Amino acid sequence: MIRITYNKDLGSLNTFGMKVKAACYVVYSEAGDLPQMDWDKLPQPILPLGSGSNILFTKDFPGTILHSDIKDIDIIEQRSRGDEVYVRAGSGVVFDDLCAWAASKQLWGIENLSAIPGTVGASAVQNVGAYGVEAGDVIDSVICYERSSGQFVTLNAEECAFAYRDSIFKHQRGRYIVVSVVFRLTALLSPQLEYGHLREAVERNIELMAPSTDPYPVLEPHAVAMPLSVKLVRDTVRIIREEKLPDPAKIGSAGSFFKNPVLSRESYLKVCGIAAEAGRDKVPHFELEDGNVKVPAAFLIEMCGLKGKKHGGAGVWEKQPLVIVNASGDASPDDILQLKNEIITAVNNKFGILLSPEVDHI
Image 1 (tube, rainbow, N blue to C red):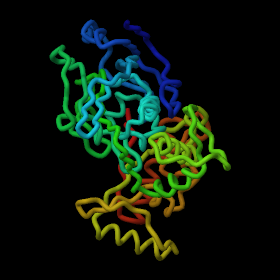
Image 2: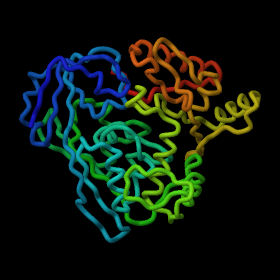
Image 3: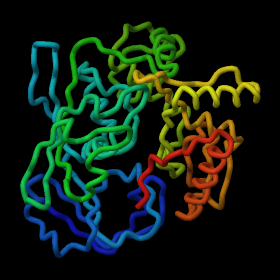
Image 4: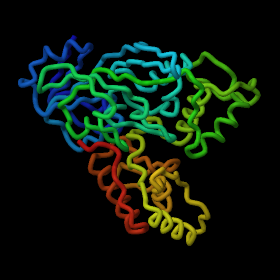
């Protein structure tokens, strides 16, 4: 079924809460709806949008917002070799719901991505990532509707050109409409705990968390100990994120606003020197296989003294300076953009590092 609304208010459809409108808003509930659309008669351009959780609308959108309501999840193949399980999820599935579903099936691969806002379709477009895992690491293929040919096509992971918070879908926006994504998960014990302090947090919570059928468990100080499981890792990630990040339902944001910069060894050592002069003995970092070093943008922003920085109705989140928030509830797009530019300038002046936004500007 296709539902079309004109002059659509997008205030509740983007997590920043920007008060903007779209000329047209189209919701489709199944893949078969897409070939039925009269694309040329819709206001242009066409923008597929999930939960609006990685978007900054800088003004009213003159074209058509296309939203998927395809929400099926199913196992399409299971291989005994390596215990690989291929799971197909509709592009409209809330991504964290997929993470919860996988944990309930004891399937490893996306637990580190728990609580990332957005939909399955957007996870492929953005190549979302957290705690050393990216969606592209476990995506086998993406099924799309190609508007130019009027055909459904399947792109394998290589054809999707996944990179750090990037994919072919961001560079050819509107050409492919994501219908569903096939994830390659595994039933084998496969925790990935080397990023940041995740291992320490999981080991601590093994002694704190009891088994539960509740998808949103609460830590109990005297709970019965439990072994390592997908659910335990997922719950730990969710708790860490809830402690650091604002709830978009209460305070508008788009999550991590900037990409974590990848530095040469020389640039990393320069950061260490500047940090040492400020009394910081350690610089959080993640060693990459190519010899480069990824440094949290949040650390660089904090070192510039920007925690809690305000511009108009926008602010830097005090618990996690990587996040820009709609602090007043009625911040304008210009408030967000001005604060973004102040952060970029301050970090560049102090460290010689140019931060890149992770959030799409529309």
